[in-house]
Image (cartoon, rainbow, N blue to C red; front, side):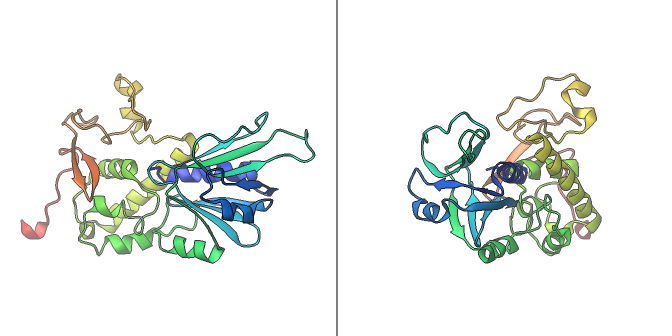
Length: 286
């Protein structure tokens, strides 16, 4: 599932391509046909993301709410010679055709495979965002909201970081890498963390996810652990980026050489180094 930086990049791309323009809106697949007809010819005001949710704000208080899920994709094509016929199951198509004809090349975007694509009002959009935890990529994010949930919870921190009601936009890659960078075992109870540890994690997430927006990939290794610095081969993975533990099960830790391990936590794989991220032991039990 795309993580928050991907949705933020997508929102920026949609805004840069289509904002303040009247669009042709259609649903070649047909599942969004009625809603698309209501939007056809309307002006897109802006696009924004909150966590893993995408919102396209059209004039007259109409908002398209999209959640890509595991396989969804929203592909933006700028300045093409001509808009091709839709291929596959296109739920939503946006087209900007310059007026008058010949004044420029058209642009289009196709949405496929999303688990959610609804036409809502701005008040409903606000309700959805209000149920999410703070998003490290949003300027209005308040990390204290997440800390209040984490500091009171007996649940594992590896579970809490993936709970979108606690922290929005963090997925499996950022979770695994954040915990490694802060030498925290994924099963450590949230309420055993100190506020200073949480603040350091939050600041790290803000920086790493902003870099992910800039580059379009997730790189989490420090300069001394890059392939160039260590004289090792670059990572080969369909997710891209250089990481410490994510999907490195059975490989040596880049820091200490211990074999990286994996297990399942609340239905998702977790990855950690048993040496760098030792299990938490409460002093009260020692």
